[in-house]
Image (tube, rainbow, N blue to C red):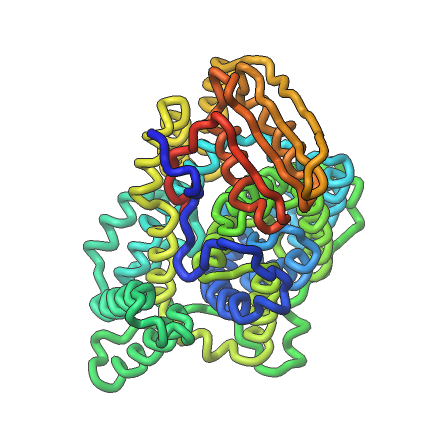
Length: 537
């Protein structure tokens, strides 16, 4: 069903205006957006860093070190404006097994450093271009699934049942429970104090999206939620001791007694076995898995970007590689780009890499200056922030829009969602990719198109005439062609002769038209039906 020609595929994210004209996207000009977003990402990242360390069998501070490096190093070097990196839940089993196999955390750190070197090599070999071949339906399915996983996994924490580690994304858990049985156990073990905090926190987060409260939104809602949670728990101890939440229901950041003690938290790698086959195997495994998760996350976050920017995947791999080298050298876990922190950044209104850097600075400052204060934050209020973020990813409008796009989009989308819910992120994506490729092969057509330049009063007019059949296999070449079109030009994309244009290619054309204003390119889509799709967030 067609939509008006001037509509964009993704409506504006709440709090972020969709650009009707060029917007200054330099970091300094957007600090008023990026600094509050960095604070939100920090609040989301802190318990996730600790939980992933715990699940990985690594020192508790290792995840925080990885988060700090991800913010200060990767965000600085990356070209992805909204992606945020850190220790990833998808690597926990690999890390846990690797530490046990190598017999030493210090030897494992040497493997992390080597993995970083391998990732830089992948970037130099331009392996990041495989991101251009991820089907759009699978990426949208990943976003929706992560939203549902966030909601389901955080419900127990919101109810005060904190037996499972923060950041777990797998259906089957290390405590022999699964996603749904954990919720059932939480319902039978409700903590009224936690429920009160979670409900009030969600009420604040929802209220802060209302236009009537716009003046109050100068204070980020997640910050207010954290202050409310810590304050209420302190009030419980005085007015209602039975409601007070104990240490296992709070953030548990290691607290050094003095600055001199900070050195005790840093572990250095042991390179004595660097050429051991086991070490090299672990390093190669980490490099490949971390790179795939990074590329998937970056591709997904680009779809959430209201400014329709495209990240540079090869540069991202190099940035991740440098980050893993630094993290491994000072005792941190391996790093990837992660969709949970990234989507929190987008939802909070982040605009550039400065938000990621800010979250790294806040993680470092928290370890150095206020660890005891942070340990007063209830996990229930942080669960509310993550549940709210999940609700923005898994919207009913997204499911409806993909359904309207046709079965060749809806089936891979649903399969990806279900597969991630009942396995984990990487396995679910793999299953979704298989189904997506099947539908691609069904539309296995050649993909030629005619490219013509001619003089124009504005300097140059470029005509891109699409062929009779344009399949998903054209996605990469068309994306690169559009990316390299000159600024300040007039572009006509003519699909009048096309009997079939793949949905992914239509999305690329719509995104190009929406973002062309930033490059002062005048775009005309001729004879091309508009993409029917809703928000992917």
